[in-house]
View 1 (cartoon, rainbow over the protein chains, first blue to last red):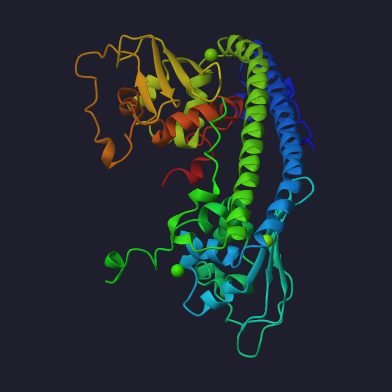
View 2: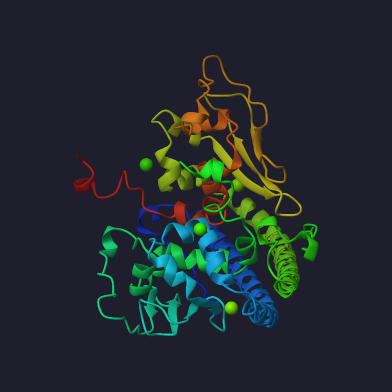
Length: 221
Length: 221
Ligand SMILES: [Ca+2]
Ligand SMILES: [Ca+2]
Ligand SMILES: [Mg+2]
Ligand SMILES: [Mg+2]
């Protein structure tokens, strides 16, 4: 788990531009390097212990997520409502895509076993106008040098697959475009919102008064 | 250490806009809220365990930092060299301030006892043209609602105290201006560089070839 310790500095390896230093100074630099190696080792050990704690708690969360999922399935349009009330997520829905969100039956986020190397977002849909695919998995692989995301195959209905967006020019703008793209994990803001905000506590969004339907006096402009 | 648990949702406290829901649904929402409270508790417990680990390792680092400090004092201009070779820190030095950095004898970063509520940066100077103060402490207090920084008093030499910068308009631009200001911890980038980058491993910067003096062919433009 820990990185191999950095190569130790030796007196005869002091960089060229310092070669005129006196020998005592060189010896002190080597000693400082030795202290730095011990500090690095402490940081690696700390990171390892912290990861173990995160793994332990992630395991403790699983039965609670499973119980929550069972309860959520008993509430009509729970995920659709939470999604529509979420400021960033609802902002990406075109009028027409709000109907697709009505078909969003289940949202799951699964960390990879070791927590640190990646995660999956799994969205389950009922019958809808966009695709004949019940379960869409978007996988964010962080353990490789150039992290990538992949998407399980989607069987689009005729004429419903959006055009590929030019990722170099910015994020896809709508939810359907997001489903259709493999955005690098570091820049997939929607994935991060689902993983770090919606999934940890969807109830807070479900319970929000719907701004479209509240207080008509303030809404009619 | 943990926040008080959020108030639990009760069936008769379901928000108004959901009041027409059937009673079974309301009961399920209350059950979901109960699961969310258990998830929140797990996150608080995880944060507490992780903080304890950070505190333990911070304690283990102290004798190593003390030993490193002793060794550093044996090397002429160690901190000045590290500072001048650091890309962000050297960028803030006017030509004249490079002389002040030559008087930088010691850099220390001390976390508050509990790690999370703040830290101090302590800079020790020898005789210099800017101030008659040997030890300057900049304290970053993060435990209060509006985190603040404070600076121990500096006895400026005549005409050497810089004008106060308008913090609302951006960061102070030079090192001396930075010493003279109390920048909110969240936006004090220099403090963060010293705490999270220079202090954890100054040796890597000390050892860097000095770009000003290297390869003159690439430098004369
Ligand atoms: Ca709405
Ligand atoms: Ca230089
Ligand atoms: Mg569900
Ligand atoms: Mg020192």
